[in-house]
Image 1: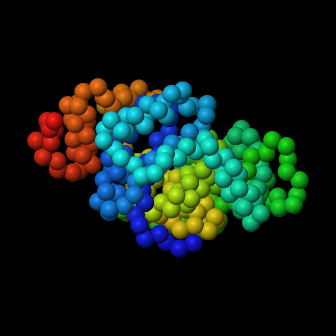
Image 2: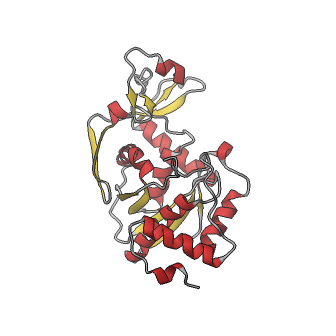
Image 3: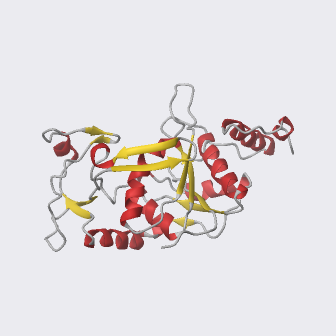
Length: 277
């Protein structure tokens, strides 16, 4: 697979709630980076976590982005319609010996002898990792990625050098979990994404995505992780922290929100822009 020459970025919200100021900051950062590079900007809806997706929220999020003046290239990609592609990628990992079925529950992992705590909780001890392609698959098993040994390194455009020992800090993680790590990687590769601009809260998940990209024979994109917007209690803005939806009704409110997003991103928009019609 050759490295694409055209900048391709993307914004990928999950329809678990309305877009809030933190969402707007991520969208603005990603969009302007693509525009500055004279590249393409794609919109993807990460709706694989069906139980948490709110009815009608996809349309509301798309409408909010359009109301704020965002223009994306091509059709909107919905992860909920791409299960066959994720299954194909999973099967390729299984055949390559990079995935194995696991029947361990969370409580079994937590009580395993010598279990460690990593960046996402308890690290799987790899109890089921001896399985090999061709052996029977236990009923109800989840598929885990066989994590490589060694340090995974990448240089983030904002956060600088990043290193993670995936085997120790993450372990063999589930591939078809609702957080959609496999789906994200498969879609990024399918769409030829070259540059990912997103929130710093996803920084720790980047090394495991890089490991998946290598396993699937893809080209690793460039990453830039933006500061996360927090409320007065120091919590990340989200549905869980009751973040308010970005205003849509009045243009003056939208312009003010956009201006504040630029300021948060350490840009220097003129004051006249804050009150522009």
